[in-house]
Length: 77
Image (cartoon, rainbow, N blue to C red; front, top):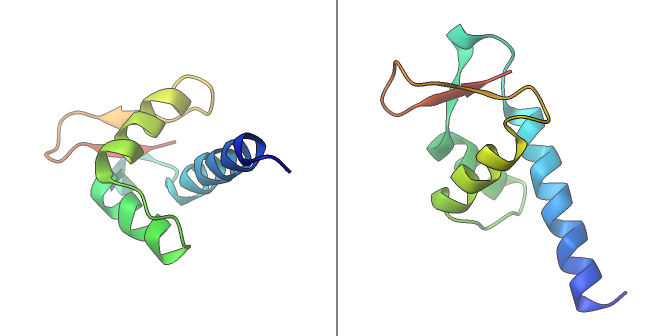
């Protein structure tokens, strides 16, 4: 497998894991900081900003929504 294909596969795996960590229901929303911690526990060493960018990418395709009424913003499905 080429480096590019491996990187793409790892990114896709990270995006899918991120989605699984996002709880169902606005009252249980999770912050991007907590998602960063959960991903680190799974071996994904990424910055909080990368997680925030990932969330924006999957927002419209995975039913992920942002609760802007809280600080930090919470994410839920």
